[in-house]
Length: 154
Image (cartoon, rainbow, N blue to C red; front, side):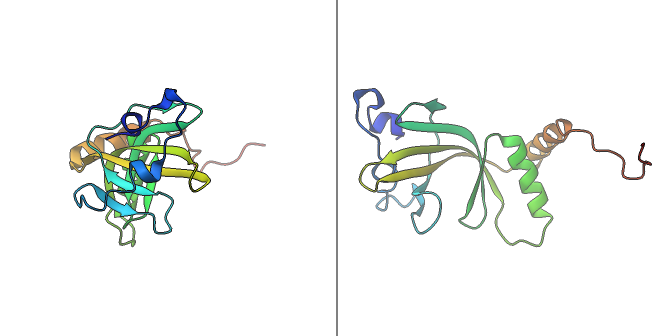
């Protein structure tokens, strides 16, 4: 289920993230986390990610998410997320570093009187060759760094 199918966006109804995605406790295969102090009201497995969308009522951003032991980092593209995962796996941090195609859905909740967000997780990217290709693409778009051994010109 996506927010666009759960609430008619053009019918004047304000969508509610917490009721659309947050009330999935009965389906243990669907909900990953609930609102317990994190940024997201819900983090859910959602194989068919909704398309990017921006209206006055809801914003859906497509990108990628990285699982940091139930804390989530969202990126607007898979390439920087893959580079983040590779760097993280080389660190002394313990998180899982799982990489997913994802969508972030944000909308104002009239019941709670604040913006709420849900993170929808699509396909998990775990093949080393795919992650390596994404990191290579990311590195190719970095600006050239000056050589630290070069003498400065004045």
